[in-house]
Picture (cartoon, rainbow, N blue to C red):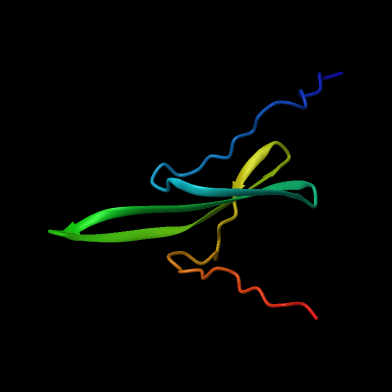
Length: 88
């Protein structure tokens, strides 16, 4: 009988080196773990000029293997903070 994998073993998602993570969120759902990595970086595009790049990388862990599921997730978008309204 094969030995079971230890429950405390880490399975870090492979994130692209060119996408430095600013924030990470993780959730367990439907037999898999999903990780969202918000990334952003700045690049000098001219004298006194800087261009920002940002996006989201999404990975899913299922069956002991990470898969890139970023697919059609929007990239380079500005996301406003949530708007809270009073409950009645």
